Image 1 (cartoon, rainbow, N blue to C red):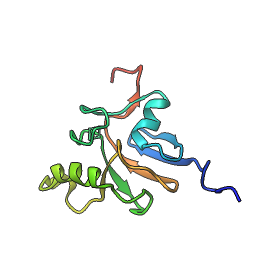
Image 2: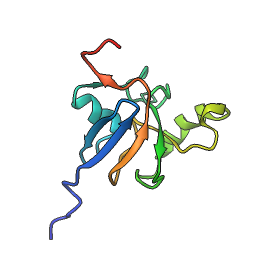
Image 3: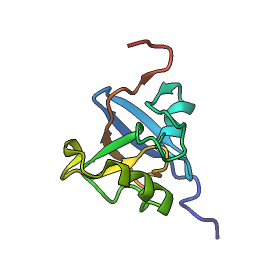
Length: 115
Ligand code: FES
């Protein structure tokens, strides 16, 4: 019997840009956004060491697969930053959505745009 989750695409709304990203299975949110022509803030380009890609989850904290040890290590770099206190934060370069959801990430924009 085929795995029905195999071709499940998750739709992630990114605010405040009001952008919708379609994320394929086993694809990170940042990779999906870049594939669809968006600039996503990053310094390390997906190595989980810069935290520039981090997102704040809105609503369902279970909308992403649990963080891997690598992502947890990267998230520790954000510890103590008051802006993120009390919020559910993930690294978009590592986080894989498992359902449709919304996140907040400033700086996401069409790659061709300079603002
Ligand atoms: S892109 Fe650097 S930590 Fe995600």
